[in-house]
Amino acid sequence: MRNGLFIISTIFILISITVSIGITLPKTKTQQHIKIENPSPVTNFSLSTAFEHLMYSYASYCTEVELSNWTCPYCTLNGYLQPLRVTQYLVNNSTNTFGYIGVTGDNQTVVVTFRGTQFSSLENWITNLNFPKSQPYPSFSGALVHEGFYEAYRSVSSQLQVGIIQAQKECPQCQKLIITGHSLGGALAILCALDVYESGYSQLPLEMYTFGNPRVGNVAFIEYFEQIVLQSIHRLVNDRDIVPHLPPIDLNFYHLPIEVWFNNASAPLQYKICNNSGEDPSCSDSLDVALNIEQHLDYMGINKDLC
Image (cartoon, rainbow, N blue to C red; front, side):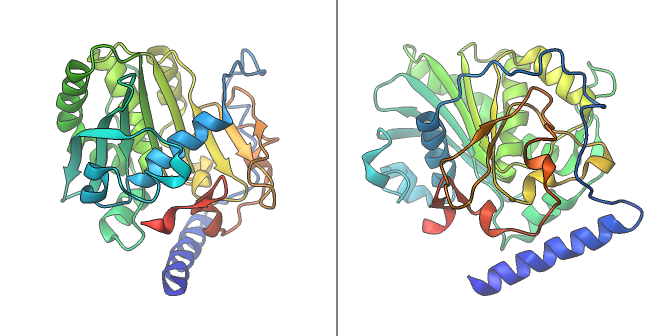
């Protein structure tokens, strides 16, 4: 584990050195870039719901056998989650992308979860660090997203559409759609939510929490997302986690609102609801970027390395 953390820290040091050549990572002051019509967010954030989403997200790091039997450490932690019936796996070995779709035991919820970054995986690190952008949503002028994230999502998007439609057929009484993910998985969850609502293959109300995801696209992409996906999302940031600060704003990447900043490492359930800009300078953007990978691996006091 120590060797893994050393390698990861080295990677981020190299990122910082690369970015510092002509590009700096200052405290981010971005409200000048994003118009805030209502700085006070309207949010139904729930700590218990966030924990539920986190367990679904962390479970994606476990094996298919554990998920199929719903016996993974996060599946059964303190008996918090209902049993989940996995109905579809999302797998692409070329992009090393993985996720799952399931229906909760009470037949009320369809769950879509994307696995986050596997630090031992070169493919996923290439995806994370491939900064050039593409334009996957030509119907909205100027909307650009991270090319690597988009390619990873598109590699499983056809499986996803079939899987969500099938899950809804198996659970016609389901009342909501959960989409969630940690790290890279959170970035894929954002692209998934837009795809689902843009394509119209689910009309279920969306409930979406992400954990430590990197920035996904530019301001035009954020505006487009908010036009299509009318429900607010909750983007959790753990104190000084570095991943939400990448890619840098200097490269015109921005976050979706609403950030929920867990701003006290010694009190892991203490949080602040940030404003509607997505880049609230009084939240995690108030920090100088620090190389703290441990806080990326430990959200709400739960470490992701049980699997």
